[in-house]
Image (cartoon, rainbow, N blue to C red):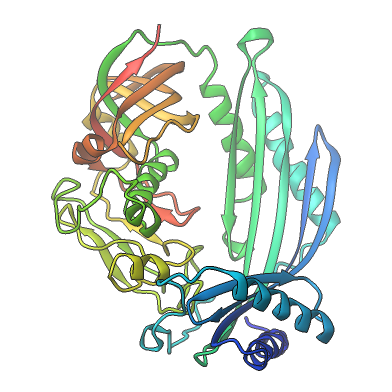
Length: 443
């Protein structure tokens, strides 16, 4: 459901910026205008903690004088402010060094088709209703079991935004989108034996959110499962990444094949195009035109058409993830990924979560990762972890205070299976991922 009058209002402002840039002598320009509004509430121990109403707007303009580039931004839509913002961008560009790779996309790469992707579902929830939902969610968690001893609270948020982008090549488009969520985090146990965990649900359409009660109960279940956690002795063993952790593994792969990492030569997958980087059963593809999905878009942050394409098929790297600038630096073409990937989908096998545990047989199930121990240049991977020790395909006990380590190049090549327990709450859609062997550092 798009409010065309609001989109047109923003388009008018963006066109004014582009016209002003031309008048001030810029050879090319691009501009964007976004307006966001929403409501966020949080409750803890049955009491309201915060109620926030958001209403933000931002305008950005980039101008080019040949290969010299300047950018400026404002949140004031008055004609004087727009003129001054363009002037600021122009004066920066005039003093900037020329960059051979700076500039707009080729006009042939711009999107020309704009299907309705069903991204906008306003939620008519008011502050009182949102507070009631948050309290219901937290009560469901706190009342689930007597061992739930405290709470970090529950929150409910509803956001809606309008975005318009245009450039001097004649591209001028906009759309509206929404995003709603419910989350909860609770603690169980007492003294030094406390554990915490959380759960959340997110969707463009509030009708697709898990119920407040379901979110609260799931948060409680996850917290209780961690009680009486222990460490492991140092060992090598198979590791199963739960779906919400597996997306980070795929994210590291995408980071390594993104333009910025490649042209800076800071990637462990340098010069890997058309080579085997994953087992031959793995397919990873982008689906930017999925109806109602969180990562859907018909064009990227530069107006370039997004592509339904395989990034990996039969385990072979078929394409990079490029913006216009990085593509020019690499002597390639933009892949429509200025601003990131769109509904990156890892093709799954037939195994559900229980079958993945059975397939692993004995090893570590990882449900939480800590720290930033991923070296994108070498692929070295070392992160704090917690989860569960599994024997004969059955979870035995919770595990904490361990580190898992390996090298991403090796880890990716030694993926054994991908589960069909797909987590749809983000832009990377994958099930659990089983890696053949990793080093575990513990006691």
